Image (cartoon, rainbow, N blue to C red; front, side):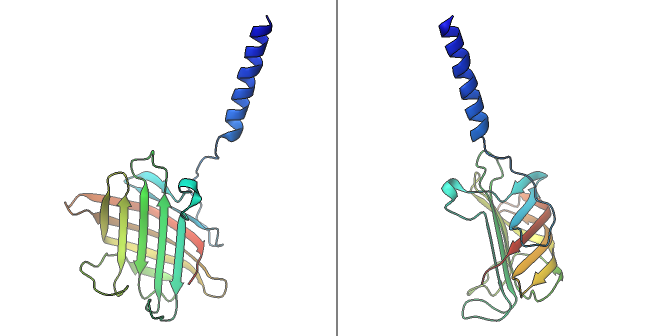
Length: 184
């Protein structure tokens, strides 16, 4: 009888400790404009959500904006990079939007420029599928900047694009959104 009671107590402790240590589920971000450092989109209708990377060594979201020219970046350069590190997912990887001439809220075309020379003189929009080790470059799409606050360093927006790999296989990135404090 003591063994049965001990086994029941042990099972209860293990069950409770497993529930306590279970990480919070990753939730698709709401569309906000408050600098909440969120990023999400759908890759072929599957949720892609910027999430913590292995041991937290790489930030899941990186946003930079340069209103004025610097030695390395042209004026109006915006870089948004989200990493979905859920490697159990077949679409884990990163989505990168590097685009030029962003000076205000509004809509901008997203097309990756092929054969671009130099440091950031062209738009570079890519989805990288980590498990397949493939890059898909944007062939068409839109970026809509909904907030560009240079005093508080907050940028928010929506995006979508179609991209192809070297073999011509397409992926669609839809319902993209981000809201972040940027650095420069």
